[in-house]
Picture 1 (cartoon, one colour):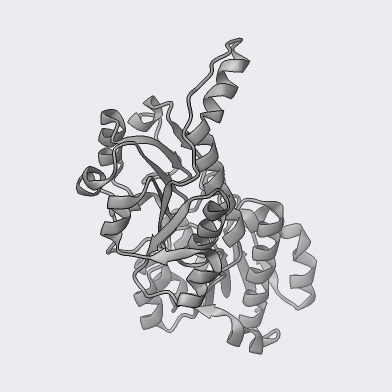
Picture 2 (cartoon, one colour):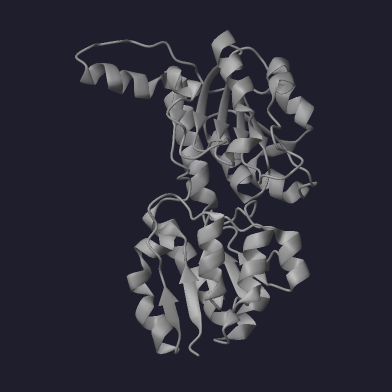
Length: 326
């Protein structure tokens, strides 16, 4: 039976034509089921994985039942496109002996760029000016200077450190926190200082979220955290939606404790039509698109395909330099 690579990640699906002939030249088939939303649910993924030898997945449902269904069929390897792995039941994958790889470091610069885009828009009301000019108005909004302000970055991995580097270019102080101690040399390279989470809440004029979602940081920014922040703080989330308690954020926006929020991610995606966040014109929304540049997508597609091929025996030593998460 011919081995099959399943592709459910939308970014790779759109460009699969660049890789299909290469994959087939190695003697493998490619299955690209039609994707109408952002990701596939558990039932679809369980059915797809049973008939796949290796899968390249995105934000699809990859819980215990799904992985068990896959391994009960033909599945022998999984590639998680990108860096986020919160949708993968890693303990189950480990128990089943299912190797799972992701592709970290592919878009540190791109996500950091988007975070700074939110900062510049919110601090100078660019999105509001654009809206008013289009409506025939000439509104002069009073913005906020960035020079001398304090940026607090939650998560000092590759993306977080690139945010530090960028805010320093605007004359801001960069302080950050992380669950691990970052080497001094890495912090000095981007002009940042590592502090506690509580210090971020107390000192930051702008708070960026750039950390992975874990069970421990679900709703990290909750009512208590918002209550401790400086009045008028800006919140920018380019990480994962559930790190913020959106009910608490709505209350903080309503009270003015949070002056504005730039959100590329949400607790539920797409953002529900009835979300009260939509009521605030001091919020700037994205579509979970931090990685969405042509260059970043291409390099991540290439890396994902290379890992999948390696798991099927094409240059298997390549896996030694890849990031295995289970």
